[in-house]
Image 1 (cartoon, one colour):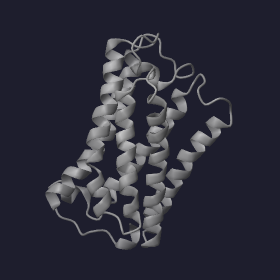
Image 2 (cartoon, helix red, strand yellow):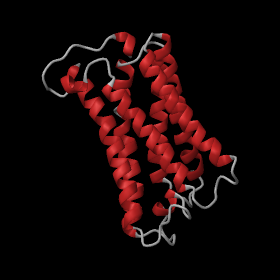
Image 3 (spheres, helix red, strand yellow):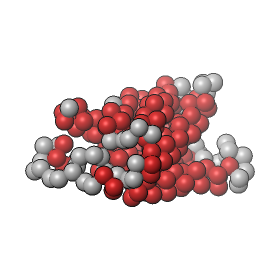
Length: 214
């Protein structure tokens, strides 16, 4: 199943690259977007002051494509995890579906809020379960990094929600920070997979890492 694993690993990496590139491009293409004044979702809402047809295409389209492609990463997450860690897989899939939903349901739609919140909460849950699963099976290094990233993710939103109303000016900042943490975790999973990424990609062979490191 090397070909399937390789495709799955690259699906995760492509997903985060496409999503982040689309969001960043939308912020740059917007005539009035300000990190301290706006939410990222403003870019995907037709008719909003900072949105244009190009920003809505980039933002909404990027999230849909990133979410759909990201579902393919579930296979690599499954094969690279132990029994407990595999509980993270359906949660991760739900997070990717929620991310795509942000693009499908722009800010004015009733389902936008639930899918946006769902993406962040579910991604936190997937990371936590993956880290705990690795800890149980002896993957101390991966567990420590993953649980630290989970704590950072929770901390970003804890700090934001305790500082005032959730939906206030500057919401784009914690949104982007949370997305960056998820991106870092996906990259971490890829490079600490049970086989080296470069071997799966067809490069020179290398011994598999010690299970105690994963």
